Image (cartoon, rainbow, N blue to C red; front, side, top):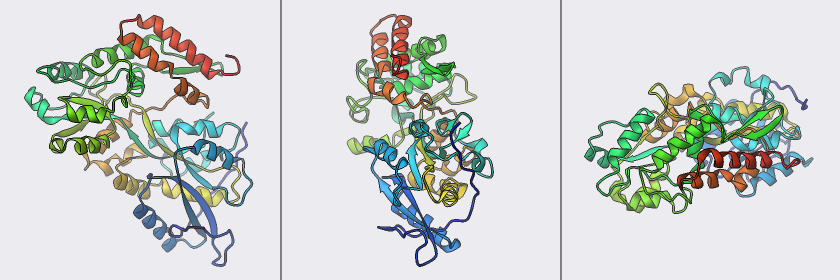
Length: 420
């Protein structure tokens, strides 16, 4: 059992962004809570408004927000979690799929009791909440999310006689076949876009890896996962995406902007790059959620985003937890989503971004979102990435079941490094 420190939700105050912070028990009587947030997660104006509101309504805590770079952050956080320094962070923003790495070793505070109070955990996005959970204990508190949608050319849809976006995978295939004519690509889908493949696998009831008897095993060879790969193969064939590269080689925004491509799968923010490349498309870009097997729900998608954690070594556990509760609460989480075009952390807050077509499409998909397998060894799989090689071989005509078994064995080896 990992050590846990029960906490109580208390009031919190905050100062405007400070270059150096104030030591706990400073001359103004406030205690300092040091918060690490990642670069570009929140705008300076949002942080000013958030902290000003705290300062106006709370008197006992000063928040020292320190912006971090994503490059090298895992090693930096790991070091901070082991630190006894007075300057160590009390609250840290971490990538949702990074939480299992930090849970290992018992260096995060268990926030289960706090999250069961008034934090609305029953409505949290699963793709943010599940990676923050270990053995039914909640260590990572969902903050914001982003996920892939279908970006499409409205003019090409009109020319093909398609009056509304598809809502099922069968409709999607049929529409894409109609779009894949007259020199157009029905969809640009690179052969190694494994995040998109993951969604199709989850939609079929499969997974990339599963845990049995406390051991993780690759699961690409399950019948459900094979059905997901078959749908990917059929969809990918309705365009000219390279079978041996991912979506960044070449950058798919450039391909969409320069060619007659009807659709691609990406986060809505990619549209900005498309319009920069080709301003004539500004009014012709639309968005819809990745379709599901039925019209009842959008398809499953990989959910990226951030959770908030509290290190075990903080000397301000109650105050730190209060900061987490405020940042992840409905008021400021909604403000963050509107300001930064994110998906809020709860399905019940989706209406806050309904006015933005791209973000609304993300929010619809996020309700069915998932994350990578909840094991600290998953980064080793992404580093070696046998999934990409498997996809290329299948798209080139190799037997899917045979290649899936090989890739699954490799995933199993990577998830059990001590026994590989």
